Amino acid sequence: MKIAFFSTQPYDTAFFESANQAFGHELAFFNQALDPATMSLAKGAQAVCLFVNDQASAPVIEGLRALGVQTIALRCAGFNNIDIEAAKMAGIKVCRVAAYSPESVAEHAVALLLTLSRKTHKAYNRVREQNFALSGLLGFNLHGKKVGVIGTGNIGQAFCKIMLGFGCEVTAFDLIANKEMEAVGVKYAPLIEVLASDIISLHCPLNEQTKHIINAETLSYCKKGVTIINTGRGGLLDTKAVIDALKNGTIGALGLDVYEQEEKLFFKDLSSTIIQDDIIQRLMSFSNVLITGHQGFFTHEAMEKIATTTLTSITNIANSLALAPANSIV
Image (cartoon, rainbow, N blue to C red; front, side, top):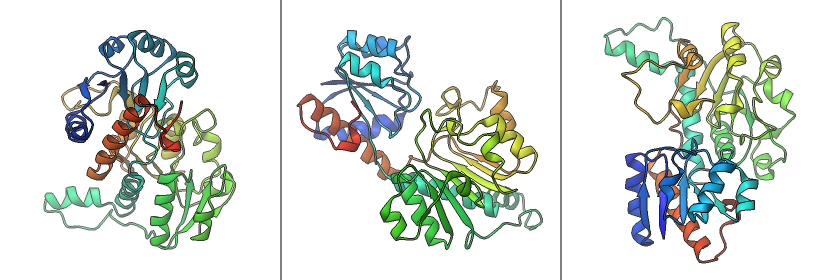
């Protein structure tokens, strides 16, 4: 079977070629993102493999169907960039990697939080210039803090467990309370109560109900100086409202591994260009904002699991075998 990979980086090629030794598929890697202008690259492929910034809209899906594509495999957990109804109508199967390594993203969220709370990024730069002064580096303990978690799927659960290990009081918001989480000490509460935490971390999927869940109204329920961490999807935040909250001190620290307009920026080296996105430029101007380029998933363990799970799902679909329920979308 031929599989066309879009939005690939050299590390994608390395991990998928290694995993493919057990499958024997024909793999074609393209660094272009999938859109109406690039979908013709999938000609001759029975499956396409997409990432977070590929756009499988209804016209693209119809184009893929006409090219003979039978499967869309997402090498990520989220699927907000896929027109699911269009895929159903076209008879194209859609699968994902629901749980590649939830700990990788959860640990990255904690890394952002610890960096912001102890200002280690600033200390690193100071010491390299032989400045060992502590002025301006005063931080705060995580122990004893109230941590609000929005979304307790696999990643949210992993984050909750880490925060409990730090001695935090963890309160979560989700449509369905997880009994395992309750058993280890996580309290489920309405969103308004979760927003009143010292620290808020977002781990929910992006959909119509969660788009801009952090906005001017919800921020009004937050404590003055709240720390917000988002390793989920950029669209969970109304970025303009967040900037206003940073300016007036409602948000005391902000850690982001995702950005609403990241498809124009992330996974690219733009160091020799002038970024035209004024919103992210404004975000990066704040000394209490830390941004990473969607690297939460990027660990050796996660990449191995993503490659193996994706190729297994594509193979099972081709052979009319069942998938793990969480990985099957259409």
